[in-house]
Amino acid sequence: MPTGTEHHGSNVSLARRAWAIRRNALRMGEVQGQGYIGQALGIADVLAVSYFHAMTYRAGDPEWEGRDRFYLSIGHYAIALYAALIEAGVLPEDEIPTYGMDDSRMPMSGMAAYTPGMEITGGSLGHGLGIAVGAALALKRKDNPAFVYNMLSDGELGEGSTWEAVMSAVQWKLDNLIAIVDFNNQQADGPTRDALAVGSEAPKWAAFGWYAQEVDGNDLAAVVDAFDKARNHTGTCPRVIICNTRMCKGIPFLEDRETTHFIRVEPDEWAKALTLLDEEKPL
Ligand SMILES: [Mg+2]
Image (cartoon, rainbow, N blue to C red; front, side):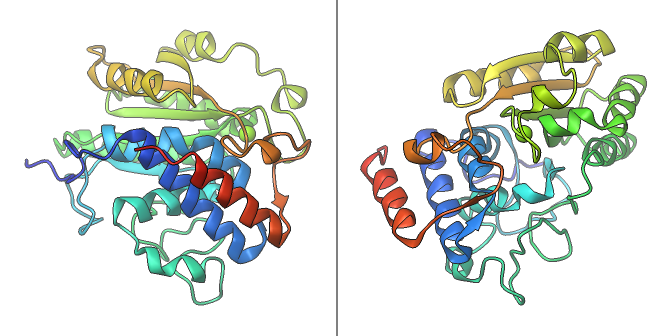
């Protein structure tokens, strides 16, 4: 089966890809004046590694059967995934001004029927990993060597359905499943660690039978290493990467805000954020 990505071997650095993802997300946020920008800025480095290092896909053929699947469990992170899909060439950049509009292909919550590259409809939290388990099992039965990546949030670790899926993946020996947990310690009602006794995540997943790693999700080299280890691990178990990320990463005056789950930004602040980002543009 041929590999499909045109990005492998590209001379564009991952730092530049992550920067572009952050910039696309900020531009979409500016269209609506508000949104889940903090999450998008926080997870941009992990998305850059996913789309420009780890995954095989064809930008012009998002339903290519040989593609690695990327399932976004957290529908409200759609702005982050759109930003990556635009940088990957799956979505056109000139649709950014339509973000969140009635006739847009980029609604504010991720919906599979609307958007090329949006593989599942997220939003009802705690369901993504279960869908990913089913898809990974189906791919194995079809002898399709593709991986299924499932990005979920730390808030979803408080959903019982997530843990049913965790056990199922081990039962079915889904070595083609890679879960990515965005651990930003924020959820709608406040800090994740104040909501439920989350504990130490990697040992917990490992105890369930997963190959578990925990990394600084804003350290590109560390994330690359973790993705490589997850793909190359020789065991028959599913894999998880706990990515500790910082909300609003890269825009200091937003990082310093106390409440970041859903943020509103004044028009002049968008300009300030984009200027700050542009000053940090990597080669
Ligand atoms: Mg969170």
